[in-house]
Length: 137
Image 1: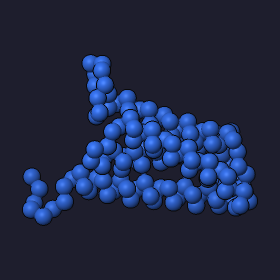
Image 2: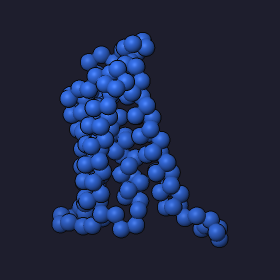
Image 3: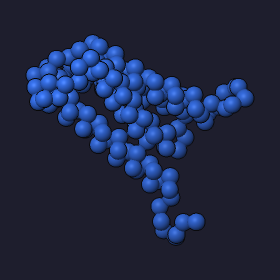
């Protein structure tokens, strides 16, 4: 039971999801435009692709939570739009890194979009009805 005048739980979740998505996006942009990790003593080695994939998976999940909490959101369409936005964002992120003395790498973009795609696909798959057929939820 909620108190009169108190915001609904879905409204609170919607606002927190939006704030988290925006903050993580800003952290990602700043983090990927700082000096290369190996120049400041952080060695990722050959697992750089994992950091990119998981980073974009988390970023995509945050944006999906926000977008799907909006009234009338259609999961498959929303997932496709968010994934498309992540593809563009990842490309812009990679292409602007040389401005900060870093290198743009095709493999990083592939890892980014793969992480985003995995979350988009899972978000749609978990909302499908169990008995076959299709649904808007």
